[in-house]
Image 1 (cartoon, rainbow, N blue to C red):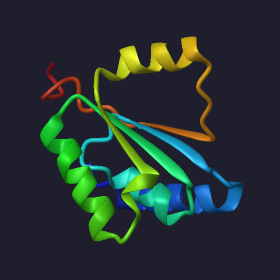
Image 2: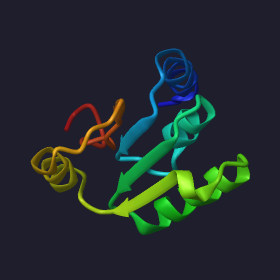
Image 3: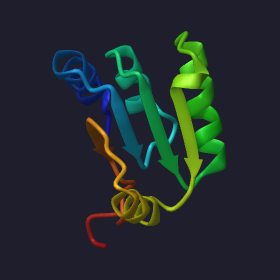
Image 4: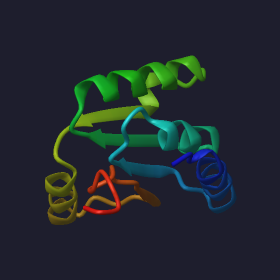
Length: 108
């Protein structure tokens, strides 16, 4: 589904509440990552298990004029990464969880 409105609202939320550190799980090509940076996030971590999608996320960050030092990409399993973050006590001001569709059709 089109996430344009959701990304806009997220950007506004980050700006309003000062989301400095953002984790974008299932980031795909980085739409929510760019929105967080546009909202003023100091740093965004994008996690996805697709290297080509993460490469596009890096392109989108650059195309929107953001410093790549403010964006970390992890080519990793999201669930394992979330467990590791919990174990390590990693803290984020906002977390985006926008998983891919798990069923290709309503019948599934």
